[in-house]
Length: 156
View 1 (cartoon, helix red, strand yellow):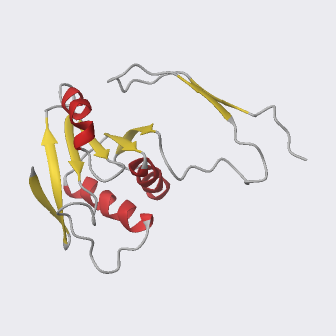
View 2 (cartoon, one colour):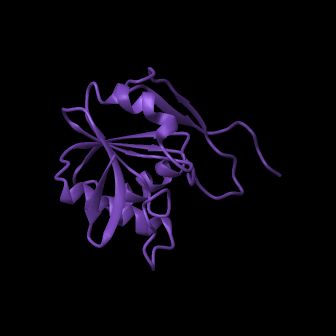
């Protein structure tokens, strides 16, 4: 585990592998529960997995209050590390951060993969959520068919 400085923010960082860049944003308290997954990804990609500010030994700077702050921080990390055409993987809370990043800029992001992401909204809460039909192989981030269809459930 090493440290990375992004502006005035210091984060713990797991790095492994070689090849195209992949930024993994963890959910929960830490990403060690994902270590086997990260090691498998590192067979094909150069994996960078920062520990979010406020988690572990990554201190939360004064003024960091929202997911938007994290999105801008990680966009700065992508820029600083020159992660061109990066694969962005977000798990749980990290998925929410990943989507917030993409709303702001996809200039250096080539692909996005979400794992049980939080914070997703598909429309007004008064309408049913769409049903999603996706398939993917474990340990594979390859395009897979994905369809979003309207729910047949109606609300009264």
